[in-house]
Length: 111
Image 1: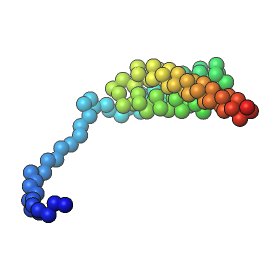
Image 2: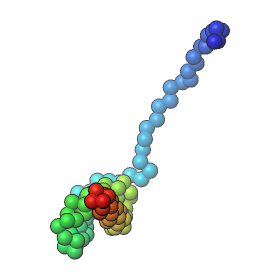
Image 3: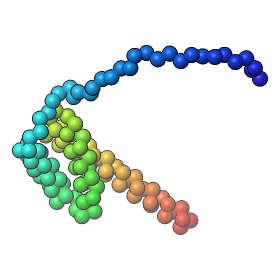
Image 4: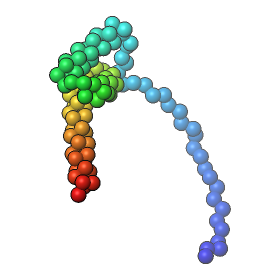
């Protein structure tokens, strides 16, 4: 057991303050936001028509996530379609995985 005690004096430097500023200022434009929403709804509606009712929730979630990420960029309308496709692919992959796990679980329980 260490019985030596050493007194340490804390030393603090000058307080540093800074402000966060976006690298590119994106001005809020209601007309642009409306155009973006129309793009999102157009892509989402097209996918929902092809996919069916089972995919309503996952596709809407994918669209919302993709839109949220796209808005963090300086060109959301250009980024959104590809992000939406990536999110859809992730949702499909997750559904396949869940289906596979459910099937295997049922097989194990039946055995």
